[in-house]
Length: 156
Ligand SMILES: Nc1ccn([C@@H]2O[C@H](COP(=O)(O)O)[C@@H](O)[C@H]2O)c(=O)n1
Ligand SMILES: C[C@@]1(CO)OP(=O)(O)OP(=O)(O)OC[C@H]1O
Image (cartoon, rainbow, N blue to C red):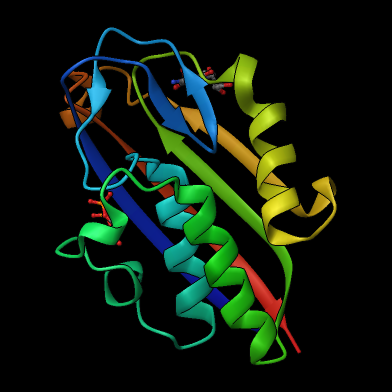
């Protein structure tokens, strides 16, 4: 059994909606990024790659490569899962936290879990997504951006 941790941040800017965990959520601003800015999936990819000692998301999908401009992060996640499967690893479980003062994530959590389970080729009870504000403290609290944390276990 191996553990992995991922953390990512994207800054608000431009026009909404935002995409988090594969779900499009109406918001007054978008998230600035080379890809679709799905901060939750990026943290999950980093946790999976870390668990398998495969580096990080930027190593595999560089933000200098136009192939990933506007990329659907679900495609990146499926690619990461395929790399792990090729090494004989499978996901045991993933636990994630979205740090955002706004928008409200709760109505979208179940859909995120379904989509992420589908992309990771696991059951929905192997995927948990949570959300928290920071009680208006820090960059997330000032609604300057969104952060996400992910922890995974993988096994052969
Ligand atoms: N962007 C967010 C942040 C939080 N939630 C939900 O609200 C609950 C309370 O958040 P606190 O930061 O006050 O602890 C939290 O447990 C989440 O369920 C949310 O939906 N969207
Ligand atoms: C996802 C990638 C794709 O080019 O770009 P960004 O959308 O900027 O996201 P980041 O979290 O900085 O990760 C780096 C890249 O892999």
